[in-house]
Image (cartoon, rainbow, N blue to C red; front, side):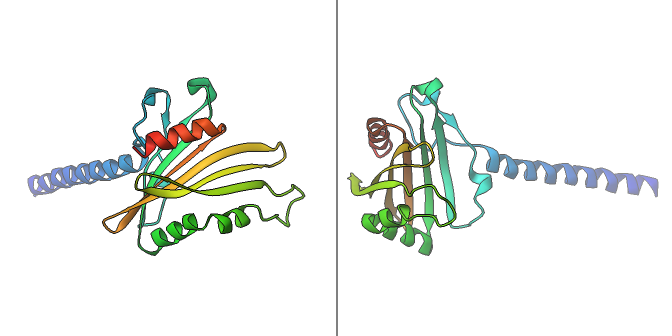
Amino acid sequence: MRKGLARYGVRALFAGVGLLTLAGCSLFDLWAADPAVSLPDSRSWVVLPMRAFVSRENIRVDGLQLCTKMRCGYDAAIERFTVTGPDALAIERSLAEPKRLAALLAKPDAKTKIPPPQVSVDSFGSGDWKGIQLAMTGGKKAHHINAYAVGQRKAGETSFIVVIAGEPRIARKLIDEATQ
């Protein structure tokens, strides 16, 4: 009787260890990070794990990278994500209407006394990637950002790349490298 229980106990232990290993692998995948894009100076960039924070099945974070003035000489971030279904179409439509997007971003917030930001949004394209170029200044300290958001539709899904940087030439350089 004891040998039979011991055998089942050992099997249960191995099954439990196997299940924990599988669960650990799936959790590792959520917290592991991949680069958003391949960059020439990629060693300076910090890759951030964002998959664990996105809970929508139709949105997949492909990568998020950040570089600070201490490491790169400038502040910048790049994100690449893929969207399917109606959400992909909604984002594509938003990027196709730069004037509407500028009006939404420049809308004053009734809850605060901070003046609305100054916003400039223009259409932008790089190869098959289509989207917008954004410049915005605002906040208490009148910070300025330059950004690009572009999308490319392939096989029922759309990949998006978002670049944000403090300097216009850096933002342009990064979006050009990211869309090659």
